[in-house]
Image (cartoon, rainbow, N blue to C red; front, side):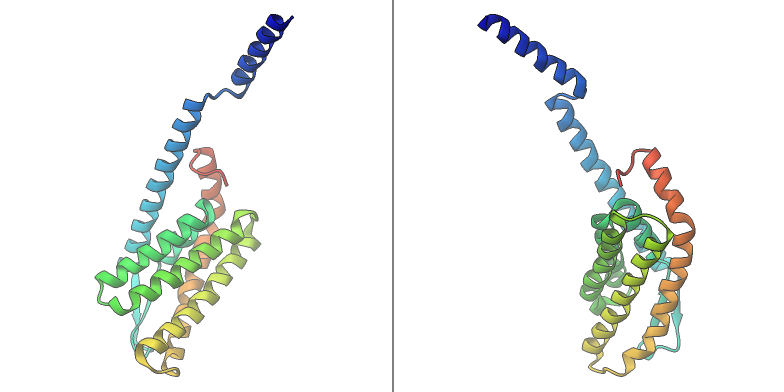
Length: 202
């Protein structure tokens, strides 16, 4: 009876392994592939954020200390909504921080790393479990608040003036507004495409 029980137990274990379709080695291989995929996607969005910040921009003469309107927020928001808070935080903070370091805005780099990183993280958190135009718009609105408040404080510290930074607020609002329009039009379609290609599980 004990031998029969043992045989039956081995048969059930083998059947369970077949039903799951994956062995331990398969799971480990899949996990490694997922990590490589996420790394490549995040690196790509860091590059896109830098490029859209560095080469698609307009300097504002109305800002006392020089304002900058750019489209770097477009890949930032897309990365956060489609691929999650981790991708959003890293591509935003590193991509735009790299721009500051390489473009003569060095003093801003630490602030950008934190502020834009928080923007990407917030967008990713909000859209992680909620989909649709309304939730995407809400996430971008939260990011806008983080940007306006964050850079107002940063500029106050950098220049020692808490009045002049107000001149940068219109530029920041325009910057996020333009990005929001572009992102809200295409991001849900991109999310569907990414799922079909097994690029994300969100």
